[in-house]
Amino acid sequence: MKYKYLIHEPRDFISIIYINRPKKLNSLNIKVLYEINHLLKILKKDNSVRIIIITGKGDKAFVAGADISEFSNFQSSEGYKLSMKGQSEVFNFIETLNKPVIAAINGYALGGGLELALCCHIRIASKVSKMGLPETSLGIIPGYGGTQRLAQIVGRGIANEMILTGSMINSSRALSIGLISKVVNSDELIDSAIDISKKILINSPFAISKAIKAINFGFNHNKNGLKKEIELFSECFDSEDFNEGTNAFIEKRKPNFKGE
Ligand code: COA
Image 1 (cartoon, rainbow, N blue to C red):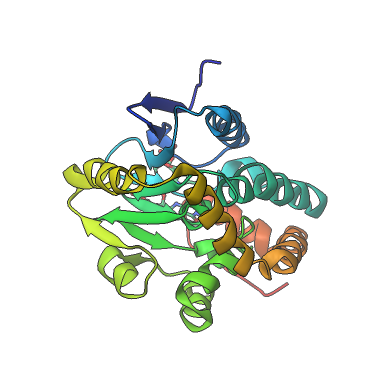
Image 2 (cartoon, protein in one colour):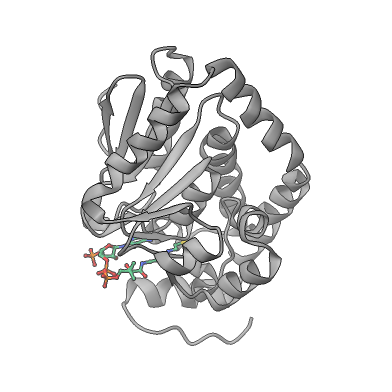
């Protein structure tokens, strides 16, 4: 299949996936999510691929979130389906993949973009990257696992701070809270992800797949949390605040929330 929004660059045992929608800061519309799922299903079965690196095309964004223009008119049932389908076909799919996925964050990783990085097994970022879950500024909550995985990775207190303020953090703070494991210059990002990949490639693929499974198993308590997140995410879609928040983004103005 020819991808409209992905560039796939196979190297020796490593597959690099570029999300390629730079004019919209690589935001995730339904088609991008479909293409990611399609490609990952192929790479999962391909024994010549042992590591996957995900990054964004362009110098500004990894992924600036789900495509707000696509869901701004959604009702709660559509919000529910959006979140459930995305979680199972992309975010949970990546987390439970039998081979490691490295997020190489090359700029804004916001909302669904940070959630994409959070479900990857390893995250590194360029110095200029900014990360955050700004959904509450739009009148919704993270719906692709962010409420669960961010808290697991950085702890509940900092997750609360990031989600409730919706603020972005820079790479050095992300490193200090354990959100990412390395910060490098932008032009060294992919090479750095490849260096990590090479260290993994020395090890047993069989053992690697079992290690991912074992680590995930210890965090399985998030299954109910993910389900609850889908419900609460979809409830936001029937609120006035959701209409105000998404319209304000589209109209490039500040929202005026009433709490209804
Ligand atoms: N969904 C849809 N379109 C998006 C988007 C998103 N999540 N993020 C950025 N874009 C689009 C903008 O609408 C703009 O399109 P236009 O040129 O047709 O107007 C283009 O990408 C460039 O973004 P712009 O806002 O002009 O860039 P900026 O440098 O001024 O600001 C951000 C960058 C990341 C701060 C800003 O784009 C932003 O806040 N994006 C939304 C982040 C977000 O809330 N994500 C969570 C979604 S659930």
